[in-house]
Image (cartoon, rainbow, N blue to C red; front, side):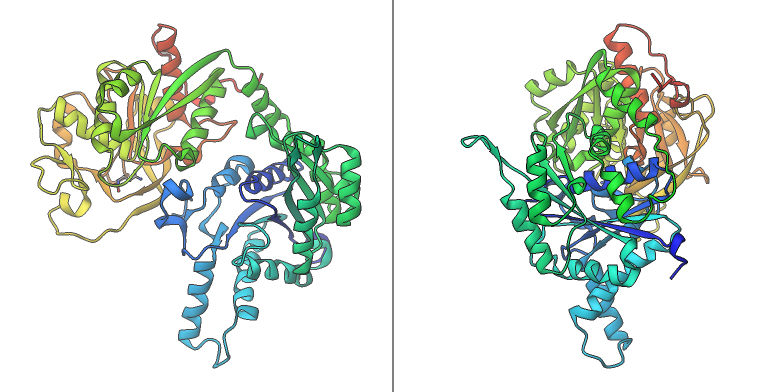
Length: 556
Ligand code: GLN
């Protein structure tokens, strides 16, 4: 163990009473506050489900798959972590029961346990603790660990047991347990009720954990008498009962929790309050001021397959907002079911929008609707951003309606097309199918000087995260360029087209990557900013004046 003063500290965030209370946002907000106090923070999520990672989970049920620089397919809470603490996390920051078990079973098969009976305690719990310890070894001052699920779930037990043991392993002062509960308001009796919180804390205690801090979610602030009651019944100091009211914007949560003293009590529990730690929240306060200081409203259509579950496009949604804040616009997202778009009603709806995004996706369903949306955007000069599948869609649309390749398609959907403008690398090079390997994680790209995209980025070498199998088919590149679609960014070897744009259009831009993962509330992503700037210019009836984020004044 390191010397007492320098030991890594761990904060474990659990949830009780109900799911979807915003544990991820609470943990992220705490991360932001600790970072704003000058501490180096990292975060991780322990998910009790059996999937090895969320890569194969249906986004319509589970929400988006967030991709890290090192190619991890992770829970969407990692997106909140990155947006709030502004650190790039690795795949080590997401662990599931499935990945724990598959490791333990692989070790058992290799004989690593020397013939011992392999059990949940200690083998599974040791594996969980090892994952936490490894994160602690990355040089952070504080590791915030969010436990997915709710105390009382069957699947959560090994995780709770592991974090209980962790305090003994790491030392009392190096661990803080934060428990998030719901304090419902019962209208007929006109009261907030603390009983669910008491039960939830009892459940946690029955597993050997006494929380240090209780964060109470409610629709209205928790009064002092109520805090006293929770303090008395759950045995925490009154300053450790934190009221977390519903906030109009998620970016206000760190400020609210700071007002309530969350960072102060966590620092005290961890013995980090002995040194002066000035808090600088000014950049974050600027963001919140921008959220409220908008002067325009822009309507952005997102045409996708999982639009009834907006969490499936969580990072896209946030990236749109960030760009809106930067230009003083409130962005209203209209979710359009891609399958229905070819209908005249939806086409008319699209024509009235300020901007259109076709986000990432897989498979055939809705593809023709996305093509229709891209065509409407191109022909009506509506700013358009195509993300991954959305770029493939704009390429197919352009091939069909401008290159006259009526049969153009992606081989993901048609293997018999005579114009496979989007295809697997192997198909493009005629070397047979190399299998379904995905291009995952961060890849560099070179941008053509003078292109709209290079101007937006303010750079000619950029790195973006990927998650796809199919690529622009370079065999057709000359044909596209001759007709005006510019391939303005490629892989460093020039073989893969990473970015396209249509110079004759105010903003018709596509990227094979997922730029949404790198947008931050105080640092909007250049491609989203470009889209929103073009939308604003169009709404105001002027030429777009494209600025890269570095030249937008984000202070107020
Ligand atoms: N389905 C497409 C591919 O695999 C696009 C993937 C995506 O949009 N993430 O290439």
